[in-house]
Image (cartoon, rainbow, N blue to C red; front, top):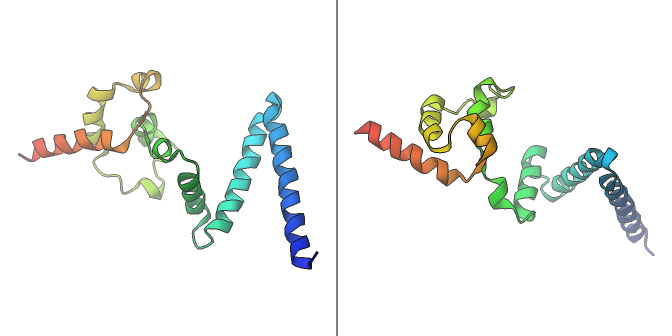
Length: 144
């Protein structure tokens, strides 16, 4: 076996053992969250290798969206977070600073989806187009 083949074989045997350990953690109620954390770290490492030109967070999101088969779910908007955003720890995060007309948008959505309590009990995750359409319709009405 060549040195390169030996290295690759050892590398993947180590990964196999690590994933087996993560599965063991997942199977134990006491360490379930640690198992999820371990798998998330592996996913981050794989995403960095798969998309080396992207920043870690962007590579992680891309691998989840591209390979999970759950793109539609992961692209949904969390209405509860949207309604609570101004009082969340992320209110001053630069990623959200471009969010303009927040109050107007929420004012359009609350009659449709209800209060925060209604959202918790009902439709928490909504496809972006289901939110955009009523907001654009309300915007068109206000411009007339």
